[in-house]
Length: 185
Image (cartoon, rainbow, N blue to C red; front, side, top):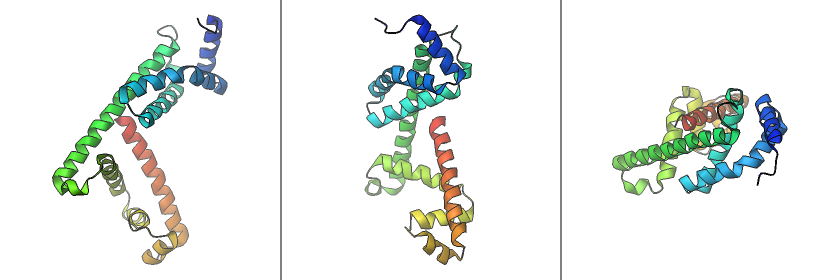
């Protein structure tokens, strides 16, 4: 039995479409268990199911103006988004496996113990290669050589503030690029 009247659903959906934060919270509270269950059953991984659930509601919120209640009900629309996000997650898995196999064929199995870690390292290395040379060098020293900001500044003869700025901007670029890469998969 439904605990809300159809009029309540209509108001909730309209609030969601209009951008009401409370409506978003209510929509999330009501339908996130469904989205999470679908994702968990398909992916078999709690972390991935949580990521898919978050991605579904972020996508729904961003594209809420496109929702047409005459074409479908909100839960059905959310399930459609969920199916797409689950498919994307499976694609990411497949690509990560392919990258790990590629790496293993290149460097041998002894260097690629955890395929997930290897795939992540390859993805991050690819994104680091896209940074400008100074930023790339700063990031390399910070994360691969484990140097402090002060040590990097001394080694590269750069002001400390410049090193910190390079790291901050590079991390932001990497975050945006990696989010785009994951969403694209």
